[in-house]
Image 1 (tube, rainbow, N blue to C red):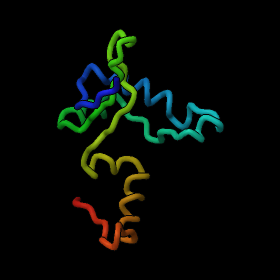
Image 2: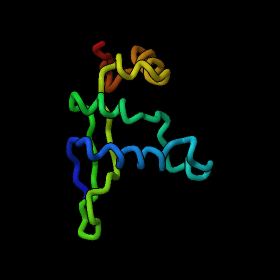
Image 3: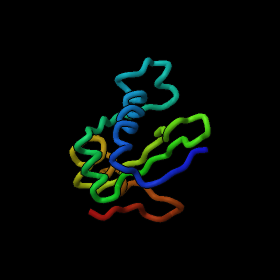
Image 4: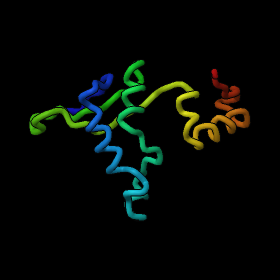
Length: 109
């Protein structure tokens, strides 16, 4: 049964394996239709996020899994951290033009 929890350093290899299996550059056009990951994180970057509790995983803990297998992950961090990839400043730039149920969407820098 899948469980979610804060990640541990021992989860990094599982995160990287899942990332690789779903990275846009590693997928055929047909595979991309099921979704993909654009940003490839390094071990050092994941370790940095782990340092302040910004990594969460979903793991398969079913009886037929001999050990926990990372089946999902979420990485959280500061906007300053994510600014190193162009997609994130682009997304932030779009926020002032968006609303949710009539409420302005904003962010803290």
